[in-house]
Image 1 (cartoon, rainbow, N blue to C red):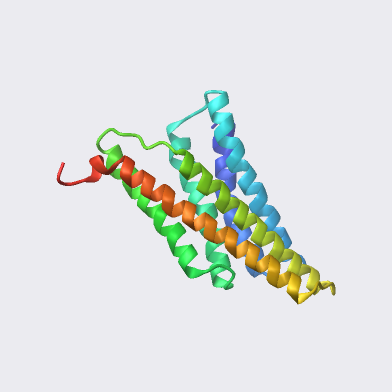
Image 2: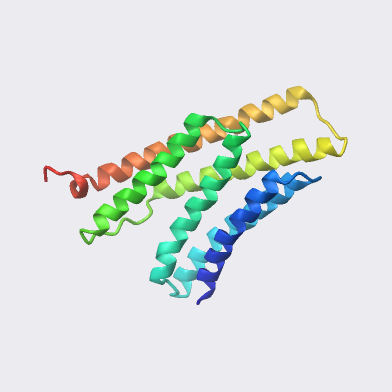
Length: 194
């Protein structure tokens, strides 16, 4: 098994650790979860570049890499939703788009068409990861450092919270936009009237 595939498997294995760290209460547990998520996100950036650069692309990697990406995003969003840190509409838009694009890929694959990641899809992924990492960093500093007896003004919390929620909404809008782009681009492959 090549290195990019090992990194992808490591990313999948990090997700239960990430979720456990969110829920197991100890000083600094959210910061530890955030660090695991950041490391997992870095492996996402590295494995694809490494596979393309050194011609290590495999069918296993093509299958597992997008699945690992979705597990990463869905795990983080689900934990934030459970703790009421992300709007349910944002959550549903992002999750629904992921399933829609996966279904589209399956349908068109049966017709011999490959659906590559487009610029809009890459942009929404980047923005979603930025929003998730920024929110988890803020959440961990707020909760963990308050647990250590430190505090900042409530108005600062409010301003940061509003900014981060705006990031999530931008990620959701980019998600919908990229989903529409995929539908338009491959409509002929899924339209039953053609």
